Amino acid sequence: MDFWTRFAIHTVIVAIGLGLFLRTLYGRARVLQSVQWTNLFDKIPERIQALLVIGFGQKKFLIDKREKSAGWMHFFIFWGFTILGVQVIHMFGRMFFPDFTLPTFNGKAIVLIVPAVIMLMGRWNWWLPAWAARALRTQPSEPAPEVRPATEPA
Image: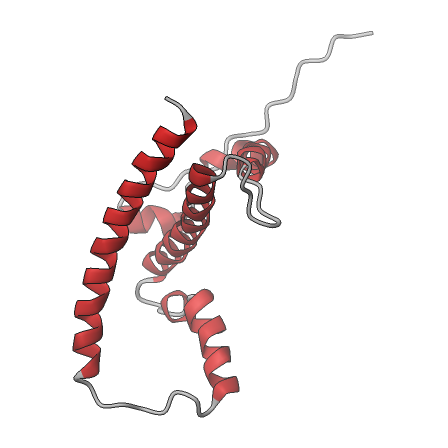
């Protein structure tokens, strides 16, 4: 399939998706118009700090003592979808322009970093701490003993 055929197909699919998105956005905007207006431009430094700590840092979910494991799961799911969203933007750009890349973003970095971290963690990859075992309602595990290669006598 040549470039212009692919371009036309992708453009139609994106246009349909964008139309559905704008229709949903219009419905939500109508609901928001019915609520009372509040001044959101007061206390800007406090609002920025709350965005960083609660929004990006997920502090609200991490400080809950009753559901600590659920908070950490929420933290990683949030950041996983955030990274996935960046990758989706990257792929949309490449759909129309094959040489498109986001500045300072290289999709190959994750492919290289994850196996390196797994290798560095070694035996600790398979360790299930007690707090995670309680959350999963299973038995905790102890790290496997370090396996050392046998040395031959000189």
